[in-house]
Length: 138
Image (cartoon, rainbow, N blue to C red):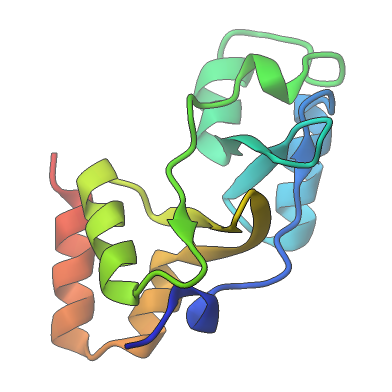
């Protein structure tokens, strides 16, 4: 059994709840990622924010991105996977919640990120196709 921690990207970079949307967007650009975990004051995972959240919800609403906090546009309770959970469990979670990226936690600590692309590099073409299809269903 392959565990999530074996395929994840680590360490995960967090944006803080009180950081601006502009800071989050710059981090995404610098890290070349489409989603960031949001860490609270206690450094625990408090949510996630995606490039789509920023563009569709914040920019389209005309907010001032340099003064609007990421906490104001964060998605609800984040869907996560445990570091020791199997890749198969990660795939089921991605498909069930229709997400392409999962924060990986160990206890209450954020230890990495597992993306659809990480899983795709591990599996053969057929399994990867099934994963993508399962995540992309409406």
